[in-house]
Length: 116
Image 1 (cartoon, one colour):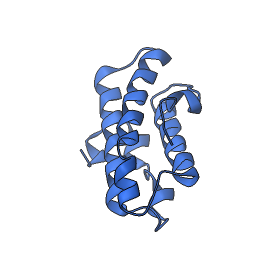
Image 2 (image 1 turned 45 degrees about the horizontal axis):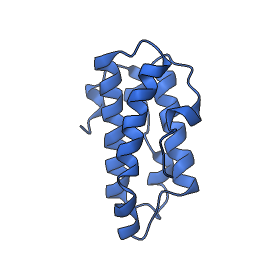
Image 3 (image 1 turned 60 degrees about the vertical axis):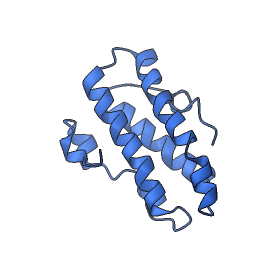
């Protein structure tokens, strides 16, 4: 999925996902695109499954985080890595998503399964 206009949440539709990574040439754009797709799929899953509480939301965000973890080798192969700048960018995007869907989640818990 890479068309966020298919989502129903207006805040999500208007958001510039991973803008901080797109602006930094250290991160290959095609890998940032893959990360963005994972975040958009997370949004679609939230809209479809409608988590009722934080534990249900965390289950979904941890799944998305694990998929980003799986991309580490791809970043290394392209002379990049998911480092401090990417971690902060990804973390704030996860936090934005949770708030846009009405959750007051802790950013570190949203991405608790991260390797980065």
